[in-house]
Image (cartoon, rainbow, N blue to C red; front, side):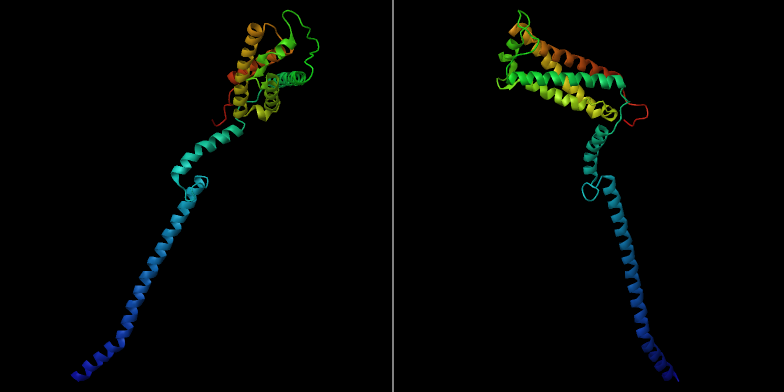
Length: 239
C-alpha cells in the first residue's frame, strides 16, 4: 500500500508538474504584459506632455524646448502689439488735418522734382535780393553728396508720409504706425533745420516752394508730437 501511495504521489507530481510549469509561465507572461502596459502608458503621457509643451511654445523646437519658446515669445508678443490696434481712436480732425497737409507737401515735392530735372523756371518765384528759387535749387546744397537731389529726397519722404498718414482709424491705432510716423518726422525736421540754415547763411536766398515744404513738415511734426503725447492706450487694452 505504501508503495502504491508513493507511486501515486509520483504520478500526481508528474501529471501536475507540467501544469505547475504552465502556471508559472503564465504568471511570468502576465507580469511582462502588465509592465508593457505601464511602459505604454508612460510613453503616451510623455508624448502628450511634449505635444502640450510644443503647442505652448508655438511649435518651436519640435519638442517644446523651453528655452527656445522663451526666446521666441517676446518677439511674437511685440509683433502682435505692433499689428493689433491698441491705441485710443484718433480724433477725426487730427487724421484729416495731417493727411491734407501731407498731400499738399507731396504735391509741392513733385513740382520741385520736375523743375529740378527740367527748366528750373518756378512759377511765381521772381528773383529778388532775398527770394531766389533758382539760386537755391541749383546750388551745391541742393544735392546730397553731389549726387542725390534734395527734391527727390523730399518726394520720397512725402510719398511715405502719404501712406502712413492715410486717415484710416485702424492705421492711427497701431503703435508701430505711430512710431514710424514720429521717427520719420524727427528725421525730416532735422533735415529741414539744416536746409533753412543753408538758405539763410550759405546761399543767402530762400526758395518759396522749399519754404512751404519746410512749414508743412514743421506743422506735421507738431501734430504728430501732440498725438504721441496726449493720445494714450484705452483703459481696457492689454499692454
